[in-house]
Length: 182
Image 1 (cartoon, rainbow, N blue to C red):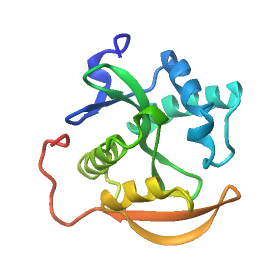
Image 2: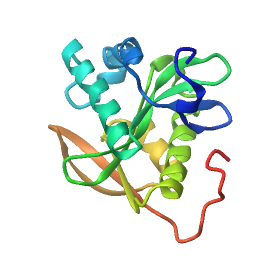
Image 3: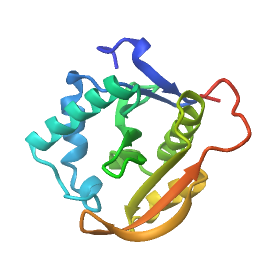
């Protein structure tokens, strides 16, 4: 966090900061994408150094092109890297919301806090009217995060060879408050 200007913070919640990825975040992403517990139910599993660099490059270019992407998630109090969370276009043309957190931060409500803030930010700051998310059918915790954030199950299908449950949320008709972090 200290090497990235605060102006690059996109979303702030009570406990979290979400900010742009930069080239300086390779080691963070490496730690996340090579953790066996994080990646055991993720399509493709543990990533190579080359795949991690491709992911980092894609997050940065997506942010530059669309003004949103997957973002670094930081614990405000300690400035620790927790994981990544955000939105991005996928091959189908839909916008997917996704999150991955290091295991030592699981069970603290950080993913739900981040996802709720991302949904709110998206519907206030973009013209996106629908978001989707998916997870391995056995990833009960991730499914609970989506449900607690207002997303609804709509199908079970294969995603990159894994049985996955798909969730979606549509922009509500009622306006959100102007402060996306509340």
